[in-house]
Length: 106
Image 1 (tube, rainbow, N blue to C red):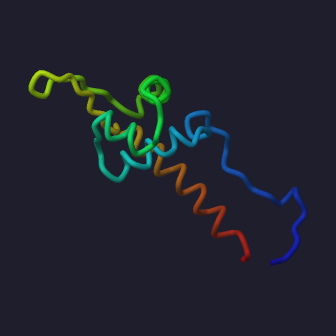
Image 2: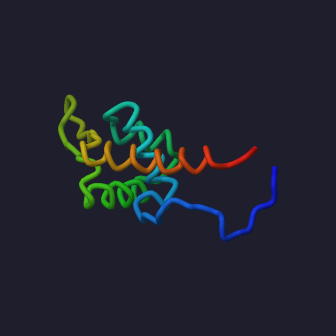
């Protein structure tokens, strides 16, 4: 590995949505599975309901996800779906990282 000047370090553009690992992980899970039930997502990410709700609200405000609330038997459930905008934005972000990794000499 060669030592490079710090001016040569390339980082993807800062995006508040992807800067939080919880939001990145939510979008990663949804990118692969398209939809997930709130309780399953909470379990996978080991987040409190309030914390998960906060991150989902931010993603929803930016139209990256949609949330459908319904009843299963008599229990309310929330199903989170990734939107087309969410898929496209997340894919573009992953490409930026891939390009950076491809430039790194290991």
